[in-house]
Length: 228
Image 1 (cartoon, one colour):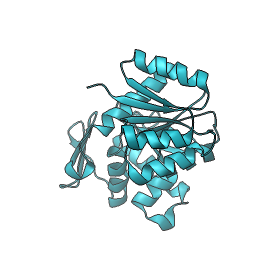
Image 2 (image 1 turned 90 degrees about the vertical axis):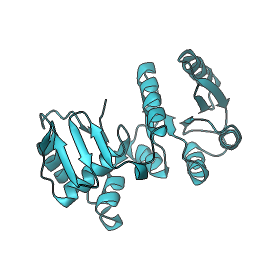
Image 3 (image 1 turned 45 degrees about the vertical axis):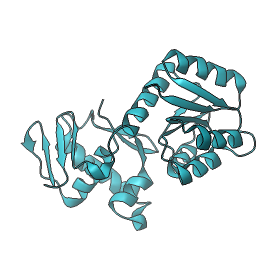
């Protein structure tokens, strides 16, 4: 079944470029040139993914993202010229799933879209109790982790951190999100503590902690758990 992608982009030339690129990749594409129209199309058309620009006339992409998240769990990929980490983090905390900056590489954009659509089609986390990624297997019921069949001893905090990351493979997870999920909202600014536990985890699960394969750093923003 063909996936439908809604492009919300006010620059008509870029919108047409994206439409040709995505249709060439086999997707059905809808286009909105402003935020109000885009939000209405989310409600009416129920797309499988939203490609959302931030700088829009009327309501901006952040407000569109906030409104969408109040009514839908559709994957949102932000497409923006903004590269300041604070802007990226703000979008992710509003509910965006990932971002790509302009000018974008076509192959990177398509790969991010495929990854988001794969995750959207996966069973909800509440139905899944065992997570596998490469040689890593995490069992929530048994509270165990194995790497290449070898049992790995993790502290409770390390286990919680790894479980949050493995439940969101490929997704960019901001520092504040990880700290809130693992330690609680009162620790949302304790980035140094998070970095320390990422260091501990890498020493235990990575084949080469100095060149991580699984836990990838997005500098100034957060981490991404790689299962490709």
